[in-house]
Amino acid sequence: MLVLTRDLNEKFIVEIPSGEKLEITLIETRGHQARIGFEGSKEIFKILRNELQPKKGNETDGENAS
Image 1 (spheres, helix red, strand yellow):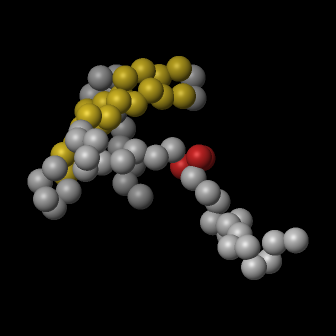
Image 2: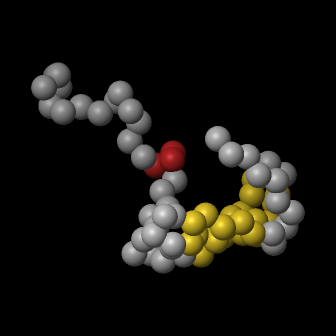
C-alpha cells in the first residue's frame, strides 16, 4: 500500500499504462473524515466504495441456501 500525505487542495495523479490519468484532490478535512475529489474519464475509471461491495466469503451461490 502506498500512503501519501497531502495538504488541502493538493493533488496527485494516477496514470495507467494506456496513458489515461485520474487526478485526485484533497478537498476538505473534518476531524477524522476527508473529502476527496476525483477527475478522470467515466469510461475508463470506475470508483467504488469498498463498504458497498459484497463481502468475500459471504456470497451464496444457492447450493447451500436453506
